Length: 340
Ligand code: LMR
Image 1: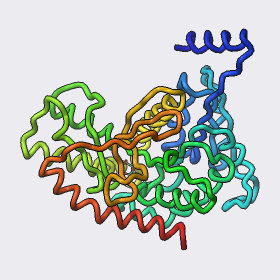
Image 2 (image 1 turned 45 degrees about the vertical axis):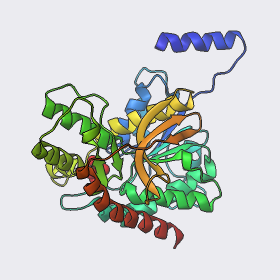
Image 3 (image 1 turned 30 degrees about the horizontal axis):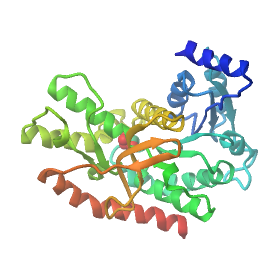
């Protein structure tokens, strides 16, 4: 793959072409998710530059550390310009996001045991709003991939912020729900004694009962009602399992970094012209909820098509009906915050 990439680069330089390089910015790059996410991006053959941004003073050290890995991607590190948080014109943020194709945002605080993702709203909503304002000003064409919780509300916040700036493109704003798909594949495979594969579609949102795995649609799998119930619950509350096990030390970081990286790779492949289908929490008219996670076709323009999620079993329809009011309320909470 590396050889292929260098070959096409040298062919391009012989004929005087410049290949468009691919830049990913990670906002919150020195956090528990940000560091392994930036590392995975540094290892990627599809990424030429990883711009790391954080308010934590350790950020230049994280960037220096990453930069010693002998791979092709260039690492840059950016702190906010001095005294600039919340920034009126944060030159660090501007440098990090300018020219980025994809901006991944894991910034914010994690849950402690007993908290829901919504309990993070008061802290993380403002962080996401400020960062997305910078993205809208300095990188209006980038695809934004939001990881910061509560995703069900932070994505609507981002949409409203971008709308106010006049740069909202619903095909370029996504909440990352890939970890729900990873968990669904892992837990189902363990139940079936098989190797995990990309097979389960997970729809809805990214919190508790708004997460709905469509286990009835997995080909060649018949589950007992007890297994179906237990698996559905475990996928919906997989995040809580990690929060509890970390006992006050935060929430999922490594699996979330892996999921964020997988999602980013899918988006980049799409931008480069491949057709990639992956689940994402995006604006759509599929349901009564303005934002809804569903399989999406990614291409050169970001989300090129939101695909219907197929027929639900009676059991899944029960969860779907329970989920919608909760999801709609969390979306409204985000919209109201951004517009207050
Ligand atoms: C997860 O799904 O693990 C993340 O959203 C973090 C959390 O708070 O559960």
